[in-house]
Image 1 (spheres, rainbow over the protein chains, first blue to last red):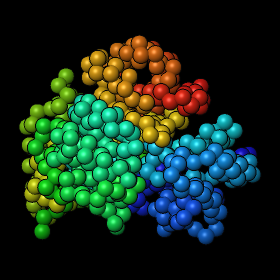
Image 2: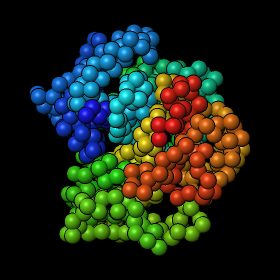
Image 3: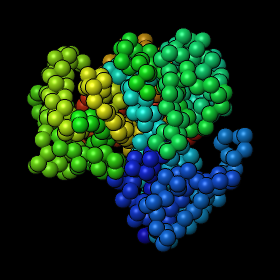
Image 4: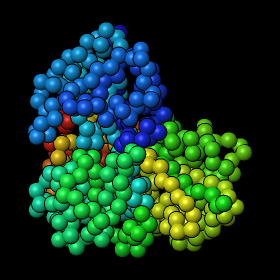
Length: 240
Length: 240
């Protein structure tokens, strides 16, 4: 019998934001795979480090951290082949996914290579989006709001259009686009309604009104939430 | 010392999708509050029923289930007063929130009434959105996609505009709008790219291509995900 491929969301950073299900699958898995940069430790692994055991086989999927954001097929071909060997041998393989497996994650590259041949399960996780709203202490979206999620690398005009057309906007992957996106939000007259969250759930977390940020660059995993609703308390970022 | 108000996301339905943190806070809370309809059991409570103890004091917040979707202030005024009494007496109060507390939830109505006077903590939860993507076994959003989340009660023209303007669209609160929204998606030429998920994570879960739904009404907590990306496997709903 072949093993099962499980993609588990490990949440945005706080190890306690794993679900009970992700924790159960992780602690029972003989093989654990995770993305890792070629120049440092794996963030996904660091989140669950306290739950891992020495008898678990670990497979780091080393992603070249070049300018190019969506790395070469060869990396995932190789990782899928290695994981496939374990699955064929009957071992379940648990793949760690920062946040949620299918929310802007790299797990899809493994899934598309393996799902046709092996049993799969996806365990959804807490996304950094709702964690950022919790940190800012205001809703991500309410009532019948349209919420738009837009990655910061998108062009100015598209970000402007999204800011105009939705009651709630989340800008993800802010990183080196912080200064540019802040200027776009200010131009749209929404600076006072924007909150900024960096490294949510980690010891180094920073939460503040966007207007108080001064840098032009931010960590890759930083988020801006804009809320246009009329409610005073929602827009009152002074609670931070 | 006054108690602390904790809003905890209990996830979309599967009790194992509580986070370790939500589970810890819930099992230590002397007082547990939750929304409940006036004509049946509380969904939020049903998710965590197996974790509750008889010595925990329960406060159902009974919401009149009329046509009106955003119920009268009086209900939340009363609930906030009752919860405030416990907080003032020094008891922590845990409020159960379906999915995530700040993602289209009613917790905001309690939060805005109590946060000024008491310490608060929000524990983000797994939203039904990523759970639906996991059930459909395809990404909610990938790479630099714009994802739009739109509640089904919004007018036709607005839903049509969102379908045109985003690579990924999630339609929430489908309920009695299923037939209308299906027609809008078909008119946009996207029916083959739409998946439907009902009661995600429950024993009665249904997951299927939207094209295979026939009813004009669905349960309130049903979701449609549309993905316009070019990748063949993402759009292949035949895996279901």
